[in-house]
Image (cartoon, rainbow, N blue to C red; front, side, top):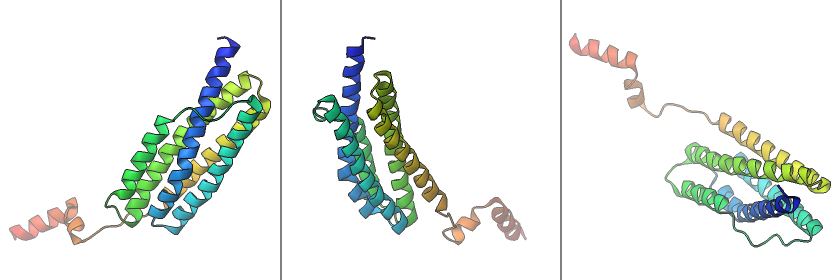
Length: 182
C-alpha cells in the first residue's frame, strides 16, 4: 500500500471516529437520564466528560495533520445510538432498564475500541507518534469504561418475582403433582 493511500485511510478513520464521538456527546445525557441507578447515571455523566476529552484529542490530531475533522457521518454509531434510544423507551423498569442500557453502552464501547485500535495502528505505521499516544490514551479509557460497565452489570441481582415462579420449578411441580394424586 502506498503511504498516501494509508494516510487517506487514516484521515477517513479519524473522521469516522470524530463523527462517532460527537454523536455520543449528544446521546450520553439521554442515557444518563434513562438510568435508574445513581451509579449508572453517574457513570454515563462521567463518560460524557471523558468523551468530550476524546473529541478534543481528535481535534488536536486533525490540527497536526492540517485537516478538518468534519465531512463524514459514522453510520455505525448512528445505528448503535438509535438502538440505545429504543432501549431507553422500552417498558423495562429499574434494574431491567439499567441492564438494557448497559448492554447498549457496551456495544458502543466495543465499536469505539475497534475504531481506536485501528486508527492507532495506522498512526504507528505512519510514524505519527503524538497521535499514536493520544489514540492509545483514548483506547485505554474506552477499555476501562467497558470494564466499569461490566462491573455494574455484575452488581445487578436477579430475584424471584412471585409464588408463580416457585410453582414452575421441577421440585415444586413434582410436589404439587403428588399432592394432587393423594
